[in-house]
Length: 193
Image 1 (cartoon, rainbow, N blue to C red):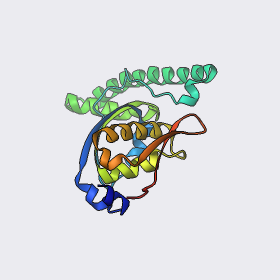
Image 2 (image 1 turned 30 degrees about the vertical axis):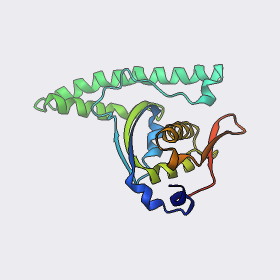
Image 3 (image 1 turned 180 degrees about the horizontal axis):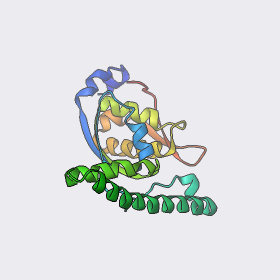
Image 4 (image 1 turned 120 degrees about the vertical axis):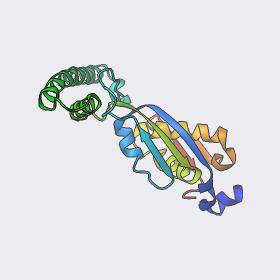
């Protein structure tokens, strides 16, 4: 493995795959994550099938660290949930009137897919992913850097820690260091394997 990584023979790494359930992340996170296509597979929680009336939201650290910003943010998400519930109620009435012969499952999907339009990127979600070792290395290298979104960076660092335990021969060349902003970033001497 050391020779494969040092010689950047990354295609060999495409045969090893892992599955992850990533929870407690925002829709903003998953919108960026699914941009990684080669070597990845995704199944995400559907807002068409799942009622989001009791959803959580992922608060960015920069907001959560400040009492005033946190208060503003909290009012916003509370207002969104209140209005989402109201939309669900009113849309249910409208769909029942307008489409009386539509099945109950289809009615719920129609209501939820319409009401979800007001949900923000901060809405908490879950996603099941499959990725091969080469794709994981690329993700960790790109999204574990200082220039990456902070939520993406946190997940990349967590995934690296898991992979260093699971497959140290493939991920042992990475190090985790503290950045100037106090967050953790990843570094490797074997880039773009």
